[in-house]
Length: 380
Image (cartoon, rainbow, N blue to C red; front, side, top):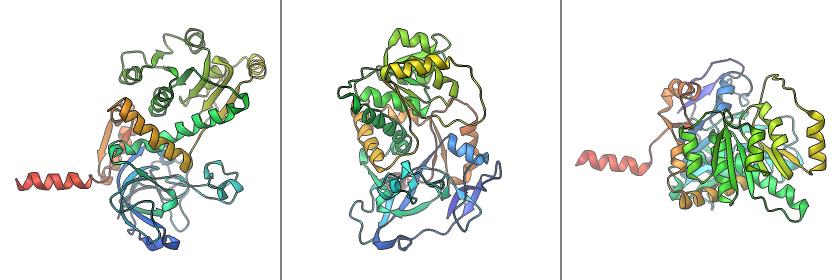
């Protein structure tokens, strides 16, 4: 069985690896689910792992199969699996339990362990392969109507978690009805955050660097949100024009924008951070002013990364609602397809070329009915 892998710690080591096909008996208690991989999205995490910035191989291996944005179809299940059946479309969660109290209660994404386990990222093989097997506990069913966009579920969960945490935190206020939100960044996460906030009825202004016209701006405006280029309107000016912002979802990957967002946030507001930044970028900020505004304004800042099953299930619900309210919108995010695991170089070229891609993904295998249709056409 083929897989796309890297040698952790060795920059630019992405390659095609061989693995034995997994079997149901690898999972105890008859709870195994064997999944045929159909599509896998790639993002900055995969790029950074290939650059040897982080990542570790599972025990017994010198390579790590990458890919954490999986989507597939159930091929077989163990005798004690009732949640899914062969033929169902599914996505597997990414984080696996460690040993902290948070891991023991199913919130693996909140672990306090120094060592964590994530499929395709750290100490567990990922989904850029032909098949995988996992416990049914970590398998989330995707409705038939979402199969074309199911590969977007994992990035959607980052947004779901951030927004859910914001609402959970604001229960302290007894009454909190956010009306205006801002999203910083119009990449995949920024687009999905704009969507999720619009589905909740908020007025949304999305800030990004590129000036209009551009495809991402078009997608945002199709949701009834406002797009502003920071080349035309600075973030703080935008806050005066469109705010006060009850919630800001930051998704730029630029730590400087975080501090601008802190100043743009309205009273009793929540700033959700989703950017994972590296390096040692330095910025000058009015620290006293920011601190004063946060204290006197009862403001909150919270981070979101990874997600547990709760947020995967919430993502399915939001994606289904999106298909009903904005039909076809999600599919427009799937801009760059690469067919076959063997074309891993092309996959990374599209990921790193900066060619306007929103979501780059590998089509590992075709949908079963597509093969049947092709056979019928050939016979005709």
